[in-house]
Length: 139
Image (tube, rainbow, N blue to C red; front, side, top):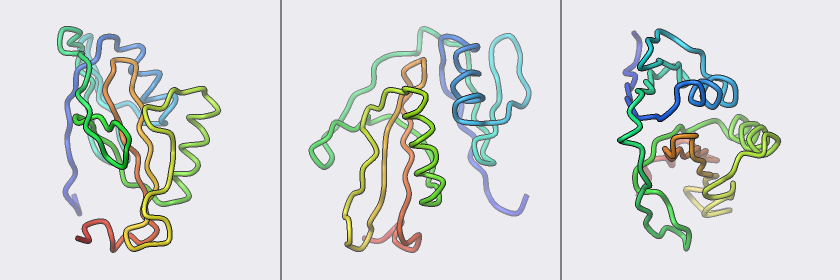
């Protein structure tokens, strides 16, 4: 392994729906699985959907830029063109957005695109991109 990778396990209430969302819609290759969980290759990071319907609940939100951002969420930082392609693919699939794709800090340092979606179990995902990747951790 040449770089650290994260591993994230999260609850779902339907593995078939998780396979459709993560595998078919997001294009994540499926890894190992059992009757109770399935691994996905989330851009070379390992995420695991565990069948745990009792843990699937609504997520609190906090105000950011006048929008209600889910507090508990995970996602990816993508190249700008990949972010645009994914946003277009989700729109074409009639995916509901929690927050539609938009650009924050346009023309300023830290310019970034972001959008939020929910998987079928209600887990929130954010997909972001930066015009200048050196600005990801800029303060």
